[in-house]
Image 1: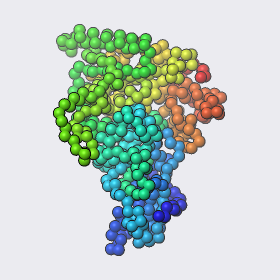
Image 2: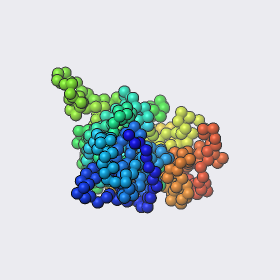
Image 3: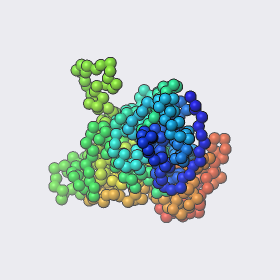
Image 4: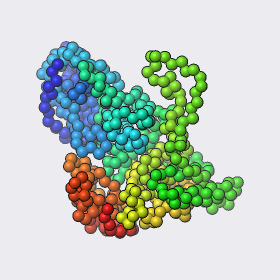
Length: 536
């Protein structure tokens, strides 16, 4: 078998282009379209998604097969979150159709994986937040670029760093969301020693649209401009057998009565903060109990029922006692599509939330699954993690770009200059009342994305708009600048770590990322953010 690959040169010229010129078919070449590789790419050159047709796979990885006359070039894409290097398939060029046909039909004779496949890597599939928004969501946004393919069933072809994970329910989420199924790279790699596969249609190139992939507007990539957040949410509910949340296309107050608020448990909450949250919950619930039977005219602010929820305690309540009668030929459990799993149980709860409160981290990412016109309250935390009570700590909201990229909800934030004092009952009550009033009085949908950011997030947007070199540094992931594009806006705004004067020691060297410090300090003053100098 000839496994030599020919070299190529990239010839990328535009945001959208067809990178192949398929040879015209003749009567002597009836199956050219079914064996030759073609590719179409969409997006800016640093952030492309590509649709391959007839892309081959064997022990050496992906292989494009083309005719010399087609002049096929293979663009670079990013396969995973935080990647700084492009990936390209190997490439073999044939002089004639007859040589290509002989190689495909008689030398390798590949198994055809029909339909649509999406390929990406996921280093952290044990964490559902990373699994969803650093893996599945950006891959789905890549599909949206090739609309209407995002409406079709597809399979997921994913590479896991830790391939064997007995408790990673994200794999089930991937499979259900896609519709056709899941291929793990470690499994297929163990099978390709003496065989080949060909993917009929395969989309790659999603790594620059992850939840940690910073955009100049500080939004979840594709969430607003491609309606990606809404499309992702609606497909997630549908593919898991649930009726999606109520649609409120224009106004938050549509179809609202007694409001449900959920405080989501967060590992960053101290025991004192948990007591404050419970006190706030009791105050709101006591008010609701007292006014539940009164007329609207006699109620100073809308009625809210508040719950405290730990997602780890939300599990499926399946109890099957009958004999299912499975057979040896069942490729899946006969009950696979008929019973709930834990993620479905969690979606059932999220679907009925009007107000969602939590701190930074995984819990914040579920806000994307809220119904139109809901409110997400980010209670914030303190950085660095596990040093929250030390003098060097500073306020942190982390995933606020998800709120900004979810235009059918409204985002509220704990007062940034009060967060150092810890979460207090009075502030939480104010935020819940404000959220309830916003919902009932009504806010327009879609929400202005910048209005869904905390003050430090708005500083970032202005810094990016007026400091172009900095903006390029943090949004276009150039190789060799990992610590400058692996960033959080709170670190920048408070001039910590790689943004501190004099830099910061990381990995045996001193890392310092350049930006207009004078501009940042003026923006910090503009948005009234308290600054306390300090180093870790």
